[in-house]
Length: 257
Image (cartoon, rainbow, N blue to C red; front, side, top):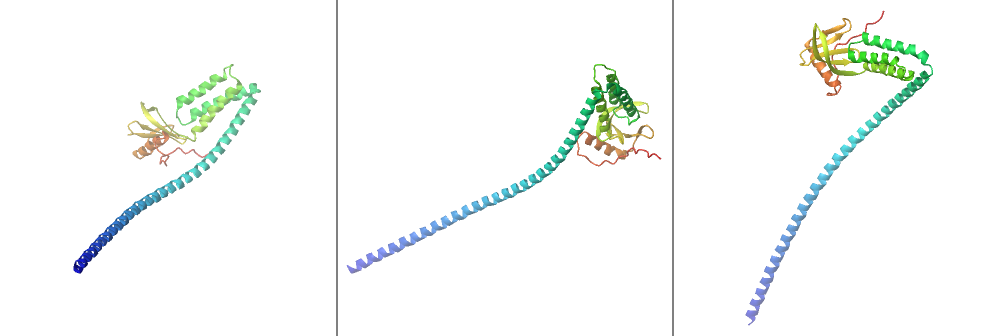
């Protein structure tokens, strides 16, 4: 009987030990699984943190670039405002002078006739660009002066506008297409005007280029080295390319003794 009890007790102990071993093994497996899940979650979190850090760095770089652009725009706007204020003062001065001319129409008429005649001489003696347009402007002014239904102030204003247009020609670059009469032949070409110091032409196929010679008062053909600069100048004038330095011959005014 005692032997049976001892055997039963041993069996119970063995069962308990076996159960405890399995329980401990299950607990260890569960702990390892939880640790793996924790490590995986930590890796995902780190990836998110790295992504957020990179995004923040990019945003900071864009912010700094935007700040620099803003500062540049503020400086540009300040300079532009000064220019606008200066032009506003100039316009006010012209308006005031025009109003004063209203009261002295008799004395202003000879002055306006002289100014129109001088403008015609400027066009005739100048570099021959946009000749038809500029001559038509002078003709319109001459007709305007003879009209009794137009005030002296309006006549003077139109004359001043024409002079301002001529002044602008000296500080602008322009490309236009027109007819070139050269060596007894008329051709359609592209003209490039650089202020009043350079007037160039290039055939539509780009094979021939030339320049107005103020000294000889005629257009002269240039060698092939001028082809690319003139082509580039035409693109710049048409706002198809950013401004660039052009290597071209120019007409240098002769110095008076």
